[in-house]
Image (cartoon, rainbow, N blue to C red; front, side, top):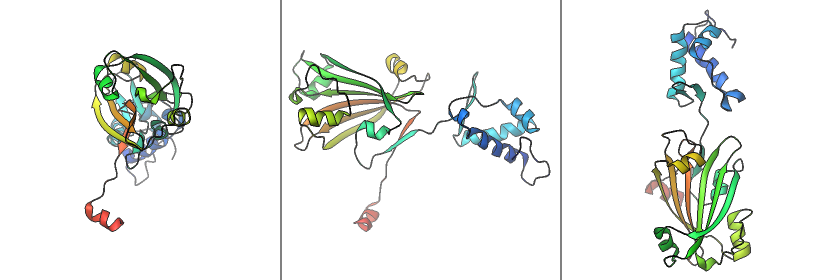
Length: 247
């Protein structure tokens, strides 16, 4: 369609304005974060009343395609990263190839007593902690924190370059076979807010993972913190009747 609405069309003006907006939000510059023109500008461009534009924008807001931010403007909502819980895989594979490691660091330190107990460490003994910040060029997406039991024998000069589970298998002879997980929500603190570049008030999706080998031994305790506005889980559940049909 053109930049002005067709007054002879049987399609209502607000729906024509909506079509124009849908074309607009598909443009790369707006999907990359540029603000949409305001209602006054759009009304002038389309040759319609401001209320007509507002009605069209309201529909896109309800669909979750755009968001209005007071004092800032209207922007396109980016599609969240989605992962399914039908099977287990590494955090890196779940996030997808578009996500890279923005930074990674290894620490040897005395850990929280709760973490120490889960790792089977005596009080005061230091543990290996690996932190990785995952994301894209545009924004960080997840902070991944891994702790390792002393039985693994992690070397003090270990840098974990490459994929974590490949490193653990090749250098330490441990192969992940099972993951026990808990997922919940938590408020952001100052550190998480800064590292994940979280807008004020956006919660954090917290995921705790206990990774076991084929013998049922713990090989990793992982805490993952995701931007709740950019990451969702999808769970595929079947009724018992449907399960019987699938067998």
